[in-house]
Each structure stands twice: as C-alpha cells, then as structure tokens.
Amino acid sequence: MRFDGLLKHLAIAFGLALGIYIIAYWGIESRRYAKGPWEVRFEQSTNGNPVMVVNQPALKISDVKFEFQGAPMGTNALPQTVKFAQPRQWPYPAGFGEVIFEDLTFQPGTVTLVCYGNEIELIPRVMMVNRRQYVWKSGITMTLVPTNAPPPVDFKKLKKKE
Image 1: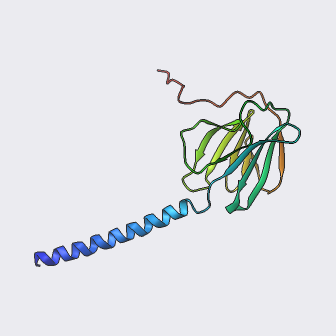
Image 2: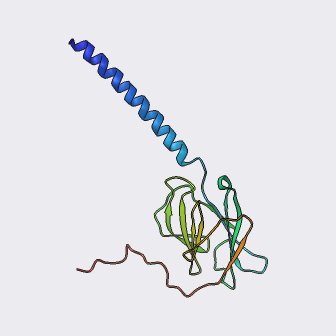
Image 3: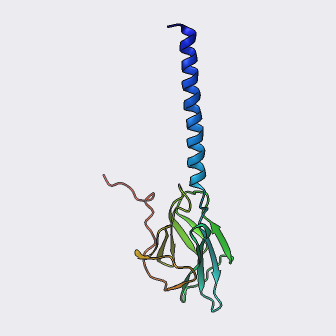
C-alpha cells in the first residue's frame, strides 16, 4: 500500500468525523436552549402580600402565582423579574427568596427556591410545593403561609467529622 493512499484515507476519515461532531454539537446545543428559561416575577399583591409569578411560554405555563399570606415584604425593590437562563453558583438570593438548587442543562430545567420557609420546585413536568407534587395549571394562585422551618443547609459550611 502506498503512503499517499494512506494519507488520503486518513484525511477522509478525519473530515467525516469532524463533520459528524460539528452537526451533533450544533444539534445538542440548539436543543438545550430551545424551550427557553423559567421566568419568575416577584411582586406585591393588592393586599400587600408578597407574590411570586411563574411563567414558561414554551410549556404554556403562565401566571402561576404563589401568594405568601401575611409575610413581610422586606427591603427588596419590587417588582423584580428573574430569568433562569444562565447557571450560577447556588445558593443565591432571588427576589424575596433564595435559590437553593438549579439544573439548567436543558432549559427550562429545574429550579428550587425557598421563600418564607416554603420550598417551591419548578420542574417542566410538575411543580413541587413543600415536597408535594402538583400539576401545572395556568392562572392558578396558591396561598402559602410563612413557616418557621430552618433555612436550607449550606453543605459548603459543614465540616467533615473525622
């Protein structure tokens, strides 16, 4: 077998592998962002209670409200809208709550917030409120009361006992 024939076959194999890689990468990346992020608006209701409004247009989820009955508003400037498009190091504050987990690998992904002691998890299939599963229904309002639950555990601060 001639040496230049071997180079030709290697170049063709390399070109095919590179082409397949580029097409697969483009396809996966476009699929990751196709549905867009969760949009969460923190605002105040007409009776002065804090309200969290969840929207996700691609999943046809709109105006799902969580009203926190009798909770203090705090000092945050409202209304405030948070789009969970780019991953961040968690936990971090968002509106009058705290994001304790997010997985945005394929959007909209999963986002878990704690607001006034209530854990709210946004999952494309269902929503979890205080570890109970509910079906997404646009336009509903869930009334929650502040709890005296301890704040979420910061695993970074825990020291391994030896």
